[in-house]
Length: 437
Image 1 (cartoon, rainbow, N blue to C red):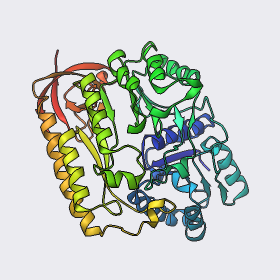
Image 2 (tube, one colour; image 1 turned 45 degrees about the vertical axis):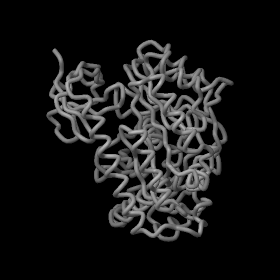
Image 3 (cartoon, rainbow, N blue to C red; image 1 turned 60 degrees about the horizontal axis):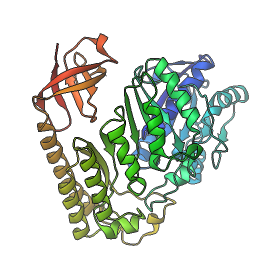
């Protein structure tokens, strides 16, 4: 077996960072990562269990590997991530996808080198899924996607138990990392040239490592030399404290941008979702954030068609979107997640109704995004250059402090630097600009 691997990642930044760690662990053992699956002797699929679409893409990808597995006995197929923490998924893989060699979950990614060695030596299927994370593994290597920015987990798991969400069952209960371990990692990253860190957790606001709050952790990260920008996600409104809002005004490195999932604008729906806050409390938080930081940009998550959602409920969501005027929003059709309380709710919404409401929501979100972006025309924004533009490899792309995507002409040597860019054209999802010389 040639020691080459390819990783296919579905899901959120937590999954992306897990894949970076898997890559780092394997490269430490002499494996080489390749860009295309066809060139790999090991295919690793890191799964997401949050949306039905991710499930379908995963099983579709798995089906595509059957023919190659039949032709190449040494080709190893591994599946891991959130979906593997669900017993019914593991049972399905055992019964219908016998060409899968290794199954492991979210709590033991550090074991992937040993699992691969065992599978290659013993020529048998290995299923190793732990019910919970026994302890947080520190000092794991990671192969970053970018030289100048990095993902940093500060906590794992979730205690919120929203009725639609499978994450507490796949990621386990909340566990916060020790702040000194977090800071040590960030100092190392800064020495390695990282300019921007994204602090990750299912609910970063509830961080309690070493007895300090998330606001206190941000203040300490703000003092790390070399770090220029600090981002974080995801925030739960119920834990967004006044002290955390104050951090935006005190810490110059904390980006003036927040992702604050609302999920719905109706109190009745929020209650069925077990979101704990209500519409009025959410809007109060938005007002506090904008009073403290008028230039702050905001994004959110919204679910359409949650069981029992009436037309009036949905209209309240539309009204909230119009009132808050988000810079962007991730919009989702509700999909049943096996094992969640909402799976058993009797008043499921018909698919045509969900899709019709979804279309109306997307129209409103996109119109507001375009209007918000239009305000940037002619402004000069500091942009951290990330790399070539996805739509035009001859252009560069980067992000403003407020997370606006900007495309512009420039030399690749600028990647990783922060440059002043004048905005010359605005679109719904991005900005165009020119570097100020």
